[in-house]
Amino acid sequence: MDIASLWGDRVKAFWNEAIRYLRLLGNSGFMFSLYALFLVGGSFYPSFIDWLPEAVPVSFLFAVLFTYLLTRCPLRTFLKEGDLVFLLPLENQLKGYFHKSVMYSFIMQSFSMTIVYLLLGPLFKNRVADDGLYLYVVLLFLLLINLWNYVSIWAEARIQEDAGRQKHAAARAVLNFAAAYLLFQHAALWFPLAVLLLMLFVYLFYYYPLLRRHLLKWEVLLKLEEKRLSVFYRFVQSFTDVPNIKGGIKRRKWLTVLTDRWLWRNTSVYRVLFGKGFIRYGEYLGMYVRLLLAGGLVMYAFPNDWFRVAAALLFLYMTSVQLRTLWHHLDTAMWPDLYPVSLQQKQTSFQEMVKILLLFQTVLLTIVYSLVASSLMPGLIVLGTGGLFCWFYPVLKKDKEMIQAR
Image 1 (cartoon, rainbow, N blue to C red):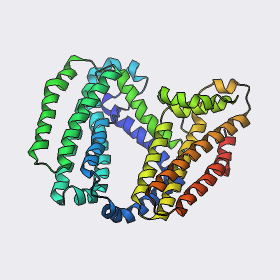
Image 2 (cartoon, one colour; image 1 turned 30 degrees about the vertical axis):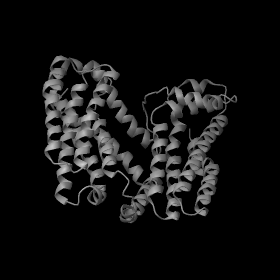
Image 3 (tube, rainbow, N blue to C red; image 1 turned 180 degrees about the horizontal axis):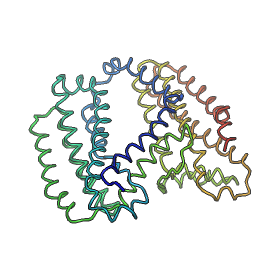
Image 4 (cartoon, one colour; image 1 turned 45 degrees about the vertical axis):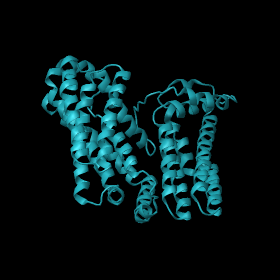
């Protein structure tokens, strides 16, 4: 095994596979929906800035958003399960491998964060500071803070317990928020600079000794890597089959209590399985909530009633595309194939689940529209067309072909 070229080989292998999937996304209706959303959003961006009330705490919202982006720190190491056996004895020779992984993760996160920041640039110049130089000074500070977070999270990978890493993430979030809030409040630069110096002090006298005292936890790194891969591949699976997807299970007891009575109301085993999968497994519930919130925000931002209707239907369609993944949720489990239940019942339960979730989202988007709209008719159109879409979408030809192919 060539240790020197191992990292490059694994990155190349991942991107060769990822590019094939991204090509499928580029030819899909989902990407067309995103293009349409960006075009419409870009045309209304100046109007949105003029319309946004002065009472909205833009600086505070900026600080919260970038605190989240800085604290999350997705870490890619490209490790595989077999590495815990074959590479663990070679850990002393892999320092360069892991340094490249941390730097790669930092660059990718910095790139995505820079895109978000520049997209918000017009709003920044309108509400925070009408100074082009300060715009880039803040970006430089954010990138430096991002670097501190990555070298810190690499030290946190020495902590085995999830609770311990979560406490460290919360502490980092406090420092990130303090620096971001000072930057977006246009405070004197020596205030955020003082926070940066405090971050450096924390690293030198806490995180760096942590690196020296504790061994690297390979299981933690593997779990983080599988989590990042699961997010990407589960999104891709909305458009094509992706083998060997792994995802975490979260109990979410509070939501289970609310839904169990409905899930267990009849004898449909697949209603229970699909329902439990949506609530507890992977990214289904998170995706659903994020698209719902994004749809509500876009409807709130658009000043035109009919564009709000279009935005509601667009996000409803995007949610329906993502929910297709739920059909494949049981593919990796052998037990459902042993149940004395027909494929038709599985198909019916799947369609019912999608229909109910889309209908619930339609009602919530209609409520959002009623809170921001100036007229009643477009709201009724959202409810009516959304209801029709929810009713007929699960039995469209494309989905029938997908179901019959399994």
